[in-house]
Length: 219
Image (cartoon, rainbow, N blue to C red):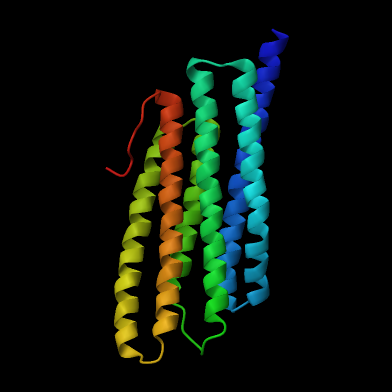
């Protein structure tokens, strides 16, 4: 009984670490977009430097989870939960990478001539932030319905990116000498869109945890 109580406590500790990790990634993404609109290279560098902390967070979660698997040799739902922990942490780490990539694009943009940033990028980030918070709720509550709804929000982000991409190509044609700026902004939009994809992956991991089968939310 004591061993089971300790195992449950360890599971809860890892889950809390993942939730904290998710909010840290959300902050990194918001800071990267703030740096873009404010042309703040110092903030962009902070996001880049802090990515190492996010990588360490992922490593800590992986090590704690693998150790628990090795020591407890869990089966059925417990094993699925630990596998889901590994998958969710991996997606969060990749999301942090995209925030870092946005910050790198900010620094590239800031050495170029003045440019106008489309509001659509901020709009995309706000939808993605909503997705992160919804994913955390679904993860905490093991809520299948909320996990499935992440795919609907991801479709919204995909549509927004498609419109941004078309608008930026038209802008590139209209403004000679701004091609580098345009392409960097397209990259930023793509990085935000990819964050949405990874959140959808988290939804799939939640469904795997609850149902025990692989589900493709992108269908």
